[in-house]
Length: 543
Image 1 (cartoon, rainbow, N blue to C red):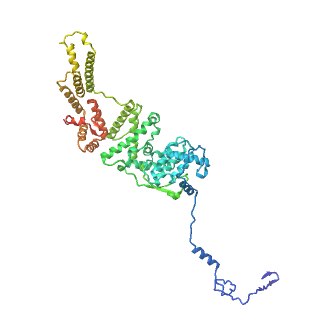
Image 2 (spheres, rainbow, N blue to C red):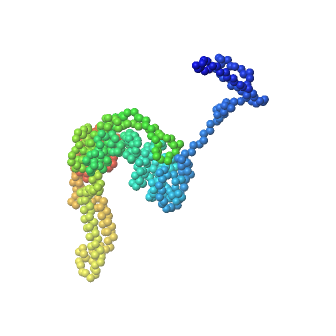
Image 3 (cartoon, rainbow, N blue to C red):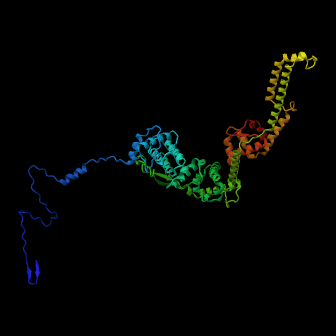
């Protein structure tokens, strides 16, 4: 219909179709009726859409094996695990992620020859890519039967080539740590803490917990520095001549205090100052390496105890750092001291005596073994020498007499030099020499000091005086230690006495032996036991 000025006009539209008698759907129906063509006779009524859906729904899912470059590498590594080559020429090889397919024939011959040499403990010069290829084999489980052996091989490779290839410090430390985690190896991480990137802090925390819990003697200054508010690396003493001494003695002092606290209070430092609950950290395994994640997974979860965050333990470690540096400054003649170093008096005394003893021991080792002269034994040796000299003189005179022509010389038969006397001497010469040898044996075994053959009392009195003097020099604690060592469970009692006195058994043994050297000229404690001479002389100490 259109509208203009003249009025309304109507238009009629006529639709033509071949279809007739089509039913008109009711208005209430919301569904459209789609016309369907007539079906032929015998044809089954199907729906293409429904058929496809049923096929997809009923189809069994079959996953194709996923093949990765890393898995192919591991498979090939296992095939070549025992392959060897005779002596070959070195051929340079450089590849970012080295695998077997990246090597030429000559490079492969060198690699398998070199790998066999390494397995036998020889480390020829080679390129870094060969080293990384062998490392990839080890971290993927090829080349070892026990995980401990695999970790050992990784450590030896690192030690052999790290001086030439600094990049090994960047990667291998972390990979060894990952290796220990996936195989649950309890190995020291001190050597790799500083060189490991990323989670080096977590590794240091793990190492601190391990050492303070079971092996304080394995502490290192690198991991302990995490617990100290005092940065010793900025100390003038440390940067001058004190670096070696500080790195050696500070961990020993911390271990000493840990042992001292355990003996005195029955609990070590980590028990006395318990840290907070562990924090679970995710560590990604073998980053930047050719590693098949189907072996050990993509990452591991590590419970990390933040022991360095314990305020009282951190405060104690900081004070021990400063105290040890002050003691080392004094022992090494360095001017100046750190101020406001406050520790318990018994701890300071223990650290002082320990460092003094260690410094004396180090100085003695530099000078060589000490020679202690026993004056009594020296006098005996002099007397023995005189006896032997006189006997040799007699034998020499007898031999000269044998060579004399007694027929051409007139002598009085009654004189000792007469012919008859000489003849008698010659006939009895063997008996005389035999008796002289017996006498010599007796004299050497039991030397008699000239002028004291009939009176041995002065020697006995001198020995008694020495032991009496030694006993008077002993403190009450040292005397109790000597008497306790003579009993069956002596060492247990000595440790109790040492803990009660705020010291250690080893320090007491050294102090007692020093007094014994001054008074007796010999040691009275050998290792952790009394010498036989000391046991026989205990009655002087009991007085």
